[in-house]
Amino acid sequence: MDTQLELASMDATAVQDNYAPVHSEIEADKLVIRGELPRGLQGVLYRNGPNPRFPLPGLHWFGGDGMIHAIAIDNGQASYRNRWVRTPKWRDEDRAGRALFRTFAGKLPDAPAWAGKDGGVANTHIVQHAGQLLALEEGHLPTGIAPRTLETLGYVDFGLPTGPFTAHPKTDPDTGEMVFFGYNATGMLSTGVRVGAIDAGGALRHVQELQTPYCSMIHDFIVTQNHIVLPVLPLTGSLPRARQGGPAYAWEPGKAAMLGVLARGNPAGEVRWFEGPPCYVFHVMNAWEADGRLHADVMMYDEAPLFPHADGSAGNPARQQAYLTRWTLDLSGAGNSFGVERLDDAAGEFPRIDERRNGLPYRHGWFAAADDDGSGELAGIVHADMVTGARDRYAFPDGGVPSEPVFAARGADEGDGWMLTVVWQPETGRSEMQIFEACDIASGPLAAIELPQRVPFGFHGSWVAG
Image (tube, rainbow, N blue to C red; front, side, top):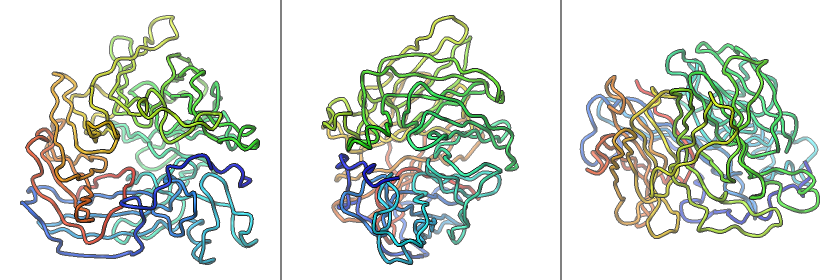
């Protein structure tokens, strides 16, 4: 792609404070622990996020090279290790000793002829499936990661052709099947989407391609026991707009939100489209079906953040905060609209659940809550009881900023376990992992593991027990 397709109008680049990359890959054992680690908490928290090796002027936060941070707990002791994901892009730039790619824009004009065209960064999520640890970003196939050393093992295709693969696959808690999708499946800024499933053993069960009403940045999607829902929302992609010097992705509130529903496991099935008011969602908390209706709890923005309007103008920050919201689709009726109900007045992001309830009716959800000052900066964690409506909240003192909270199970009951989050402490410039009782967040952390290196703000992570 030509460099003119760079999202140059996006000025959310941050290479300062805790957005700045770290430059060392380290290993450290016997970390300092404040408080007492819970008995039974044994495993590794893996986190992924952008950490540019060679930052460019104008580099967007989304475009940094992936770096995996692993915080391991073993018999009451904690250790830390971090490694860049050595994608083809990372290896080409390592050889050149400089940046060769720009965010979403392909190679720089002066990149050497020997450099490849693969600009993947594998910087968004890290999950385990079929015995493999996978670093994910939505433009490329999963990248295999060695669990202990964090060595990069190369692309894992599961029998798929080269192309996009979501950073938010959903694993069925009953079958172990991993459901996935990929947008831009028929070319850059196209309306093509592919949807499929990989079984618990890593075999591709099926894959299908479909067309959406318009090109949209589809970061996350919705999966229930019987259905898949693709949220096509008016953060639109346009190749002609980009070629004319405009933003490749932009907010277009004149377009309706479109939710495409298709049956799971039916590659030949048709898509039913439901329409609603313009909005944007990066992340889904959970979804389920009951009495002919499909309900999805999402973190919904009235206006997409981090991207300009189609004419290049800036958006309205007052509308660019996400709130826990329920979408309801009547699958048994003849209508084509979906209901929208706000569930919480606390703005936030990065919703998570006890993933043993993926796609099923559930009771417990968590998200990182924004500061009440309207800045949008994350400042706490909320536990939401989706049955009683009760809320349990903890605000981090001294300006502490949490990452996405991740659930670690203890017992068989939903919500029986701990919440883990990496917290940046701006007063000291240090990071630590804090551990909470999952259903008693307000009581504060049970323990904190002081990390030997700052962990930059990132995106998503997973707890792997054992």
